[in-house]
Image (cartoon, rainbow, N blue to C red; front, side, top):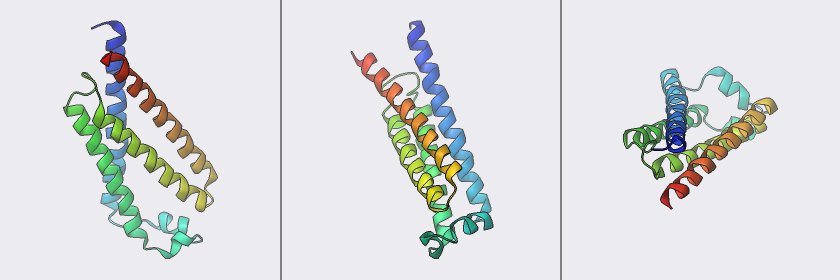
Length: 142
């Protein structure tokens, strides 16, 4: 293995662990709450989403975060960080993109513009990760 290959493998491992830890802990925390906390309910109370049941919405986010964590775990166990192609990791990152779109929408609707900007940055970082991993898969395939 060359230095570039080692570096890319470590980058893939770092991305996988970041997704696993970030979304695994986020999902776990929401499930421990058991229902939508008051701050979540208050955040959407003045929007059209305020008329929707908040706990299913909150736990729906937890389900998505949990699925993303599982995707990262499966990718980790399958050693995609070491042996491309990283199909599961790539699909997991695509899921992360859509989660950040959802979270950004919620932040915008509720007037949390700083949070919405953060979600845009998280989306951009995830897109960059996806691009780099996809490009490396293509390079290693040739």
